[in-house]
Structures are given as C-alpha cells and as structure tokens.
Image 1 (cartoon, rainbow, N blue to C red):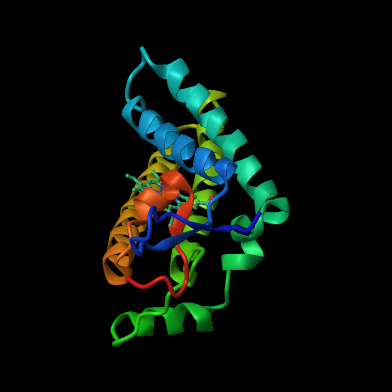
Image 2: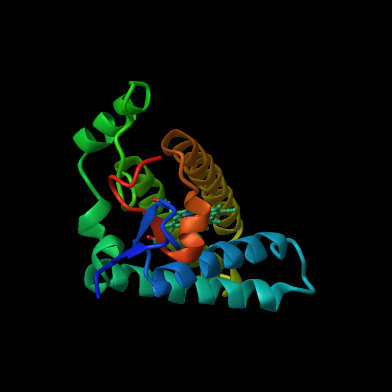
Length: 190
Ligand code: HEM
C-alpha cells in the first residue's frame, strides 16, 4: 500500500498526509521524554531513589534501541537520513531567515544535532549516575552527574524551542506528527 494517504472525505479538498515516524520511533520518543522528566523529578529524593535508578536503566535501554534503530529502522528513523555535515546545518539555518525556509520531511539538519546531543548526553548522564550509585569516584562524579543532567535539560529546552519554531515556520504541527506519525505530504500545500 502506498505511504501516501488521502485524508479527505467526500470531495472536499483536504491535505494529503504521509507516514514519517514509525510506531517504535514514537514510542521511543515519548518514553524517553517521560523517563527524563521522571528521573529529573526524583533526582533529589531518597524515597524515590529506586525509581530514579530504574528510570536511568530504562533510558539506557531506550538509547540502545534508538542507536540500533538508527541503522536498521525505516527510512526516516535512520541516522543516514538526517545526520548531515556542517554545511547542510549552516544552509538550513541561513534559510530560516530568508523568504523560503528549507523544508525537510524527516528531521532537519539542525534538529539532528539536538537529537545526537540528547542521546550522547543521556549516555554520559547514565554512566555517571551508575558510578554515583555504586560509590565510584566520590564527590566529583556526583557533581559531574548533576552537570550532565542540567546540560541535558538545556538541550531539551533548545530541542522544544526548535520544534515550536519549526512548526511555526512551516505551518505544521510537529508535536501532532510525533504522536500520529503523519506529516503533510510534500506539495500538499500549507
Ligand atoms: C514537551 C516536550 C517535547 C516535545 C513537544 C517534543 C517534540 C518532538 C518532536 C516534534 C520531534 C520530531 C522533530 C522533527 O520533526 O524533526 C522530536 C524528536 C526527538 N525528541 Fe522530542 N520533544 C519533547 C521532549 C523531548 C525530551 C524531554 C527528549 C529527551 C530527553 C526528547 C528527545 C527527542 C529525540 C531523541 C528526538 C528524535 C526522535 C527520533 O528520531 O528517534 N524530546 N521531539
């Protein structure tokens, strides 16, 4: 069956949509976001220490899955589809201030940097948290864990701001796309 689907009903010209995010990428995304939020909220509490640690291990599993999916998953989930060189990032960012912002059906080249940064910061935060939990390294590792988690929160802030900006520039609801998996088909109009 074609990936392109007509969402319209009886004759009224409605936009066509195309499947972009597969179900596993979407489940990964919202599980990863919720785990990060949960781990952040339980970070200071002795009572919820186990929850915090379990969420950390859960995120490790999620990142492991996402890395694998980046090589064997469907087209738009693959790293090769959205990780581009610095020239592509610069060209995308320049286009944002011009009359015709570049449109990418999958992740845009700048968003891809935030994605890689979130996966890398996630791994570093989890590794340092594991060391803290196992009493390795002392005070400095505890501080590194907090700094890494705060850096990750900062990247989340940039990521969410990028999603809002890009949704506004292209007149499409990217949050809905990450829920339904569908985006406006290229050429379907705004
Ligand atoms: C309210 C909060 C959030 C919203 C609305 C949101 C929304 C989105 C959207 C719309 C995309 C797709 C962007 C595109 O079209 O290129 C995306 C991708 C992504 N987001 Fe978020 N996000 C949120 C929070 C988070 C958090 C907390 C994390 C990590 C801790 C995160 C990590 C990611 C990752 C890794 C991707 C890439 C998805 C993939 O290809 O696997 N997001 N997000």
